Length: 168
Length: 168
Image 1 (cartoon, rainbow over the protein chains, first blue to last red):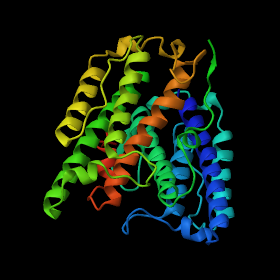
Image 2: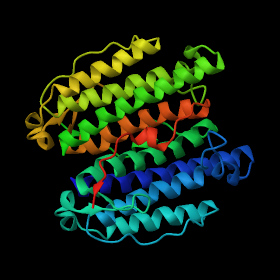
Image 3: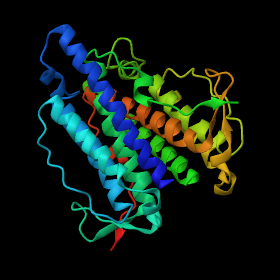
Image 4: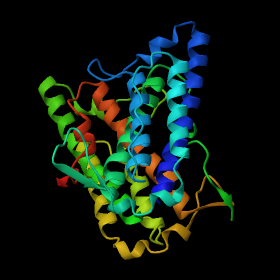
């Protein structure tokens, strides 16, 4: 299930790429600079879209790493353009794809530490449900919300992406 | 893990209640009617906060039911006030709490159907990761985003709620 959840988070990052495609088309049609959207936010003391994308990527990358007993690769938060953001998403997905299902064995018992919580640790099962899932979908939805608020034509099915419905 | 994920979704609904408490305080301090926030939205063709709360509740309720082999209880979408929304959240959590961990046995193999997809079905494992998790956190984050956009003092720790950090 750890593998399945992280794989779905990576799929959600692919979905995010498609929202950004729609955002680019929207900016072109309305003749405004895409950087307006990339720096868009819902509140003046909230981080902008670029950060929401970086942060979603980081929670997925961290889950794939820590839950498989590895240290996450460092990805600098230097993106400023849409091609750079796309590259950030793609390198995150590429990293997640390097982790095989078997490497998540024992994930529930792994311990995860945080620089902001010295002397503390979190069990892998708590980390997945209390950190990875809420944070990944928080930042993904916030990215979606910033686009939606700015008139980009994204809808629920764009958010969900492919769904594995089969014949009864 | 099914039990753990659904339990965390219910905890996230408790977190949502705390954001609504902050929203109520904000409306009182600024002397505007709470119904303005309850009917707030990020885009004119988006559903308002009341719907986001109802929908988050319904995805959690449905997961607890279908993944434990039960039919979800019907909760009418009739809420218009904050006390009514709180009651909706509380009855959802109360329902989730009736489902014991043992009742999720075999959840991965259960089949879930949807009125909008006649003749189709989804396996329990796909349902959890492709429907329950993304939809629950989508609507929760959208509720949070509407409040945040309207100046309510909610932050990431309000979103996450209690985190099980332990001593190393």
